[in-house]
Image (cartoon, rainbow, N blue to C red; front, side):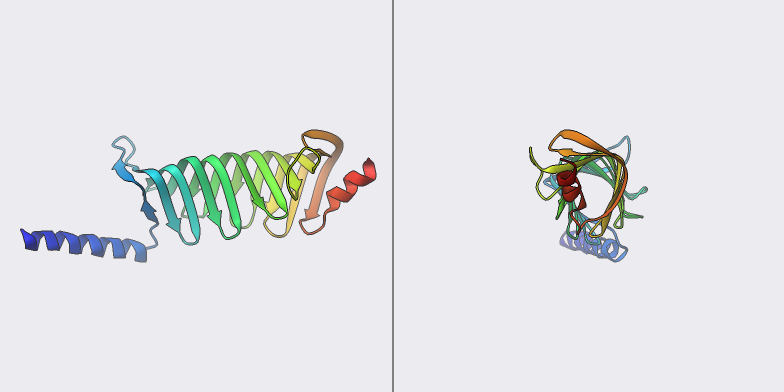
Length: 194
């Protein structure tokens, strides 16, 4: 019996080491199970996925091995370098390192952003129905609202069908903006128009 137990431990250790070497994510949670309908591995309670510099946290993470997709739900955060996204649900595709989010909020100084639908990669974040605040969001903070907003982290943002305003109030229509994040252009533009 002891020999059989040691053999099982050896096989588990070897399998874990092989998965890490093959680029598999590290997943952990308070409890794990398998969904018989989908075959997803289900991690519940402080669920965590760590994969090639990406940390995905949530109340639950469902991982589909065949599709290499992780779906995190409930108090979700995705951290990659200096980027950190907060949402109720994030679908992360490990194969191409892209993600899809509904109702997101995130900050990467000096920008603070929220939006309804997000598709992102390491190089660009595309949002629909977005709101962008330069520095901290607030009632009197200059704000840009756009139907479509693309952020190139650490470089620039591009907005289409945009409106400049103060807090939640949109005042000045701007059709297209292509702006460096290091230049507080829309703060100056807002002050010029008022």
